[in-house]
Amino acid sequence: MNNTEILFAFIRVIIALPLVLALAYVAIKYGLARRGLVKGQQGGRRMRVVEQMPLGPKGLLSLVEVGDKYFLLAHAETGITVVKEYDTLPEPLADNTVAEGLPDFRQLLKFKLKQQQHVSHQDTAEGENGREK
Image (cartoon, rainbow, N blue to C red; front, side, top):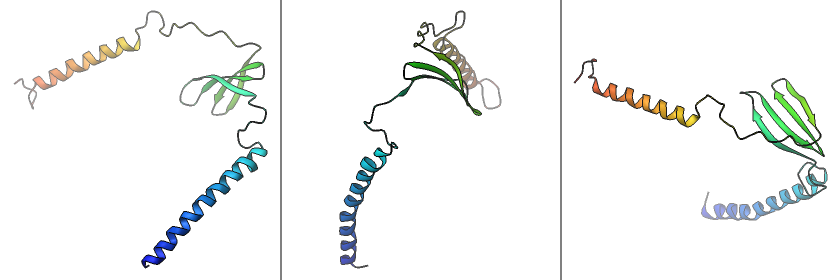
């Protein structure tokens, strides 16, 4: 290719790219939004997820608001099950995130780090064949 062919190819891209973007914008804004396939301003949302809690690698609990009702849903590999229906939003749980009698994560982490440092100091005090230096 010579320089003029490269220049004309570049000019075609510069002209075609804005046209394609404009067509995509018009199609999404007016074509898909009228069919309800894209979130728009038509009537607002009728449903929202209030809270979710994982129950393992393949399980999930969701609290969903639909209109003036609340539903507790269990998600599993096999499907979704309605666990309970509420007329009003359930009260939030107390902020006792640590069960009584169990250490919190910070305490466990400090303990494990101290153990790891103690073991690494012992390893450096031994020679290559297990004898002390």
